[in-house]
Length: 390
Ligand SMILES: Nc1nc2c(ncn2[C@@H]2O[C@H](COP(=O)(O)OP(=O)(O)OP(=O)(O)O)[C@@H](O)[C@H]2O)c(=O)[nH]1
Ligand SMILES: [Mg+2]
Image (cartoon, rainbow, N blue to C red; front, top):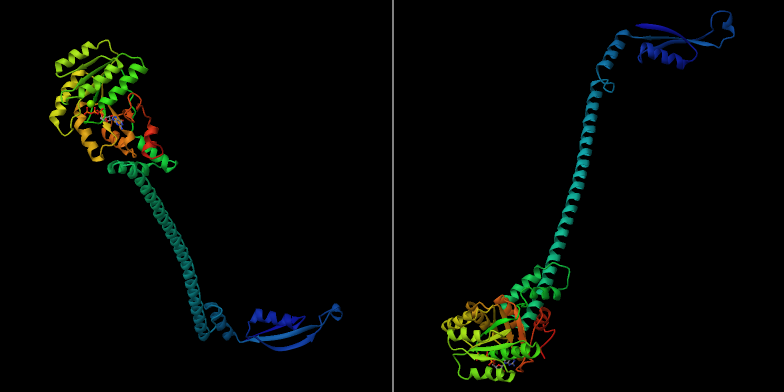
């Protein structure tokens, strides 16, 4: 037992001193009012004498307990409660963090699904864009196809042109793209017109008439010296046709039946600026006839051989004609009888297949008027129906 006496001014002071010194188990044994000792004691305020005691052993045990355990666990039931409380707190904390985690992952998920939806929307937009642009492409394609079919442009060439238009990503309108695509395979001849000019081609396309027209142009208009030769070993009466024109225009004229005669005829016209050589129409299917003609054409040594084809020729026949005459190494193409057709696809069909430039077109039977040069633009306008002959 520990007993201690305190002189204090108030009971509050006494209580805190006792609790501090003896612990909370101390008990107050007595209290009484006292005066301070000495002369000044009389004037001093009254003091309190407090006596307190505590059981030593119990207090020590308790103090040990207090320092050995956490302060909130003063006995085992307290401890259990505290542990339970702690567990509950931890569970609550875990629950809270789980909820928070879920919330965060939900938010991430939400964000992800938001992104996914946005991505899908973008893809859909693209898809719709593609569908509508391919729809536009299809519409444009069919418009172009229709236009070219109407002009009697052949299927193979239509496909080439459509492809070229579709590949053209420049910022110009479709008609211009189409015109550009058509122009790609159109060349205008720039062969100088002098020396020997030879004309070959199927029967009745207008070779002799074309020669008469050109003879008129060169001699009457351009005042050049022109000579006429005909290699007409095949059709009786054909000679007369060109001879008549030669007589009217007063031009030297020779009929050639053999290769030797060709040499002689050319020599006899040495003073001419231009010699026009007519040939009889041969079927492109008859290789013998073409070979025979080739010998005569080679003899002329002409570097200006013209394949004459009529614009009224069927599309399917055009390619066979061009193929048949290829062995004559023609340099230019003349397209006749544009006045006899309302569609001009044949012009581009021929030029595209022959890969040769065009020198003239003829537009009627009148000699010498119905012949002229043509520009790329005019050809395209004719083919697209923007213009017509006559
Ligand atoms: N409408 C029209 N007829 C033409 C044209 N060119 C020629 N002709 C006519 O076509 C027919 C045949 O013309 P030719 O000049 O004899 O033909 P060719 O190619 O010489 O014939 P062959 O000598 O038999 O191979 C004639 O009636 C000509 O008047 C043209 O541009 N338009
Ligand atoms: Mg003829």
